[in-house]
Length: 431
Ligand code: HEM
Image (cartoon, rainbow, N blue to C red):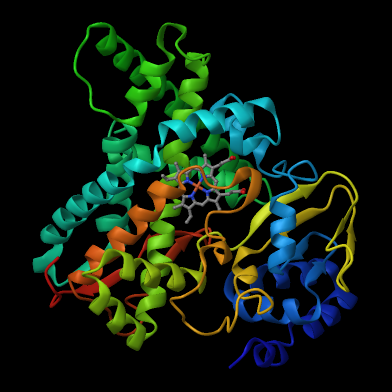
């Protein structure tokens, strides 16, 4: 079934118009619910009929070019809808909470140097080892709850061994990242409970990182040998005025690494594995390709296109802007509009992505929007890419399957963050 057929079958716009005439709040709730549960067919219909979908509460941007336009105009489309909450949790500004400031420019550059893309292969090895240990431990059980038993521990292991942030323990570090990120990305209504949990988790996290920085500095001054992790690199580079970065900025930028990673990497792993398992023929091919990393990775990215972890990226329009100017869909976005740019829709835009409904391995990299685009594009992209692919690869090499009935249904907090995904395990190949 193609995008157009889906759109015709969907009838979302008709139902929305009817609901709007009766009760705008109900109509708004309806769209929010569709975006959560029925997004693929909603977006197909919007791309076809109303690609810039204006509602009284928000505007959804569905075409590839327009999503890129929103994400690359940071002086027009700002992160104000979640930025101040992120700043509040960390007690100081952070790059993802601000737009186009000298701090964005300086600190993103600094952290790009610290997260050297050359580290990717060592991180891949580290992840492979950790995943294998966890899979060995689970092998005799015949099934595995993959979020708590594999995906999150792998991500938290990278925080410990590569970032140099083990946390007091994995559970506490995971609790902090969940609380802060849930407020940043899922708290559209500024729920005060979610906000309070975020500020309290952020405060604990920052205090922990201050202590950790003091430990690392003491060890450096004593000439003790330290691992070559990101924390040590940044502490070393910034000590005794070597780089013009204060300790406060070291701490905030280090906080950003687990925050950017621990929720989104397991999220992407769940989506990719589920999408592969839902396509038995593709899944069999992916397993057959799992001996060859590069060939295998293409399966992960294409699977993720069918359900990216970040389906919507929120922005606030800061001044009146003509979006998609010069095209038939050209629309004035008034200042103050809450805008949802939809990478999940953009990656199905047939004008850019040929045969979007087909599972194809030859998609060019610039069609992918898993890691955002423009000013706030993902700092951790190189590391994140290998962590996601290698974890999924090791899992598939063990032989994995969906369990009957609803046992393998993914459970998600706030409809976004995966908490549980049980799979049958066994009868795979060796790595
Ligand atoms: C090593 C792992 C990761 C780190 C350290 C990291 C860190 C960050 C940081 C600091 C930003 C903000 C950059 C800025 O404001 O200029 C960011 C943005 C982003 N990251 Fe990551 N991230 C990681 C993994 C991931 C993963 C696994 C995904 C999803 C599959 C992801 C998706 C995104 C997206 C979509 C944005 C853009 C957000 C926006 O524009 O509002 N990241 N990342």
